[in-house]
Length: 294
Image (cartoon, rainbow, N blue to C red):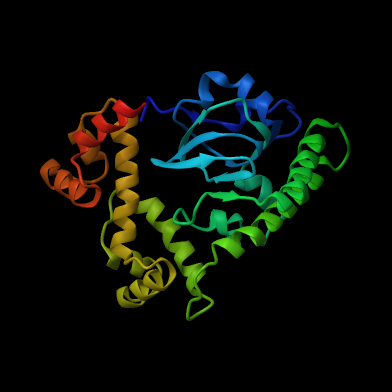
């Protein structure tokens, strides 16, 4: 997808001694990057943004979310998004890579937090008025630390983002509780499945392939996915394919048949039928509809 900008965290870093992390006052960030932030783009890093004031919409992977005062958004690497504001928002934003977090928390993964656990989990949260003050102070402390030149800076920053993620996870989980599953290993297996799908979805589309990769039966893998997100393994694979198809359809100049080939479908007619079955319109109609709404 040559037309879709993929932003690298180094584009934003102000301090060369600090790699893999960036923080800014939201108003300043939007002003300094106005040429890119309002157009669809993706990142190679995790993004978290808090709105102390705001009104507008945030499109993430073709889903539209309202921006309101107290909104928090979480993006994983590779997700596409764009903003449209009715007035100048206020708040704070920070980015970081997976490596930045894991360097200091060797046995922890960002997928432990529910908003980063799965693409199927909502990427947003609306804080109540009584929750905003404490969260805003967390974001402000992160931003202040980032712009200071003090010793143990990285250590403090990663500790601060861990704290804000814990605070936000507690609020998030009270609103979007993860479904209880029969085994404590189900969530980990599901997380591993998503990672493997990310590697192979363009070439491997059978549930059997992924079950073998995880050393379990297809039946048991379906039991896990149904218990976790109420979808079969095949439905999960197809959903990932369709998301990538949408990205190519609207953000590249490739022909639709080329997009189908990139995703492992030599027969465009079959790909088009699958897309229409799941999305209610053909790939061409989807492209026209999306372009008409920009």
